[in-house]
Image (cartoon, rainbow, N blue to C red; front, side, top):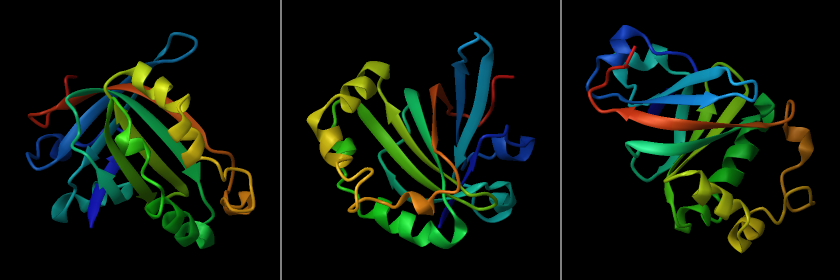
Length: 174
């Protein structure tokens, strides 16, 4: 199983470990304040205590520079298997979209927030995906009886947008 750390700045041990792939995520909020997060994967063995999530599905390699969309989905603990099954059985339409680079589906270890991270060449490709017929097809069961029941969610989901930069040497720039 693969493990990931998402959100908090990783420890010095983590950022100097060559086997860990780390991305610095940065954004400017609506009030022009800086927002930063970190995403690291490859936390095996001694770094496992740093993990905040397990990676239950991944497609594509992490790009050096990308537009990153994080869909944060809080799910009730007893409904987690239902949520995972639905995501693992998804149509996979996003992977065929122009500008798509990678996806990671993260299951929480210490919280209720699943994170679906998609990596795009730039923001315009993500916008094009949202406006496409493939997007409509992939989400056609949302808010219907065929889709996931709202009763599995512990609270509303939320989306965060970042610019991501991979640190190939495993080090941060601050």
